[in-house]
Image (cartoon, rainbow, N blue to C red; front, side, top):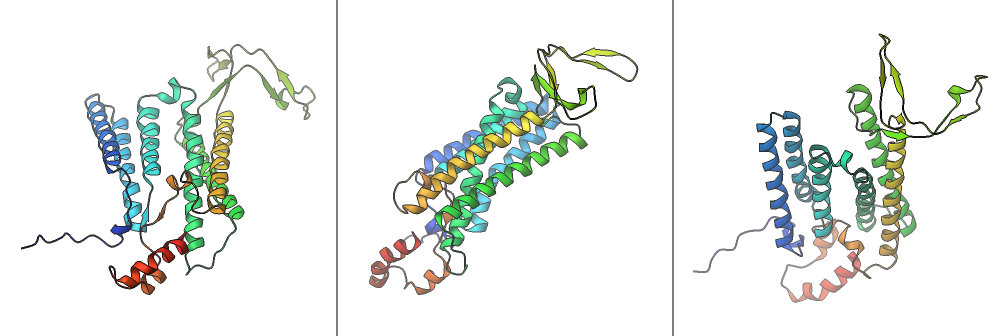
Length: 298
């Protein structure tokens, strides 16, 4: 008696994993590392870090959840980068203090964020552009502009979130910057708008309400967030521009080159209009129509 084949969920046949071993290995290693970190933080009674570990495990499930719910296929490269991005931000950045140990760590993540958000924004527009039921037909240039704006909007909203956490909960998500030179109109003797430049700052002394003086000993003036925010937005801008340019040439030469396809999600299954028009699988008529359908979807 032939073995009964297991029924695959709808759209499964359009889920394409080029390297299952790589994806499963990355998932296993990262999750195991987070679980071990969670146990260690629990025994150290650092419950805030325990919550961060739990949050990381939840975030790890989002790519697969989005694939199932939205019927999209995340390319292997994009999926791996998203997982590594979450791990680098939450576990290495926050718990292992990479944000303060390595000053470029936050810059690297914000650059990657701009790149990834542009890829996601581009994919959303591309999917709508190719869906017959949606009357949206943007040129490659405007698709690139839309992806860029989407990425920058996400970056700005994140900076709003960091600012809110710092203001209302007294966090320090907008990491401070030590400066040796400042320029401010608040020191203008005439109380006008002439900026007074102060150079060679080596220390700042805080005078508290009770008259106590507290030297910071940081080697300069402590900027509380604005430099970090503008730097984050600038590198987000760079990442967004880079992928928007890649996406533009990807659409202009549809089907040529494979770099952009490693970062652009796509439908797990064909649009409904194509499914209705296609004969039953396995018939000669379908085999004859498959090249035309693939060309149309491209």
